[in-house]
Image (tube, rainbow, N blue to C red; front, side, top):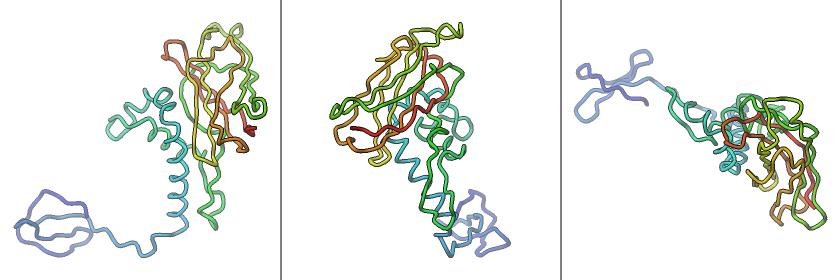
Length: 227
């Protein structure tokens, strides 16, 4: 029960949606909150299921999000206060429909629309022709390729950093690389844990300027089976 610091003399009980009670020799009031008779309605289970999946995913990416979402998270909380980059990403993706329950008869089953995932924000430009394949058998890596499109837009540079992040839904784990690849490289190899062999992972690209001031929107590269 939410409490108020106001006192109105000796009172006890409920009037409308206001509840009064005695505490520490004072009368305190709060708003009446009815008990929830069924805390596991389909709608409530769906929200909890979505939040569980989002929390697992974005906490595994926290280091990556601290780079790509940091500036937006600084004023995204209540009254413009800062929140963590991870919580900001959870909120954005819960709201944009990337993490949904499609069938309310099975509210525990969550669908993730990876192409809609938002891991960054900005008006930077990603490279074109992006793709990803597993590295050579038993190499524990993913090879990501792209086309250097520097000549297509004067606002982009060949030394822009291409950030690559891979998420393993089976293990709720992520790995990423920041600073090793540039737009001009047109390829990059991302090492993944040996325990990921046999799993299917989701790969994303975010491009930033060399000074990390300007970021691109998130680009979904695709699913890759790790060999």
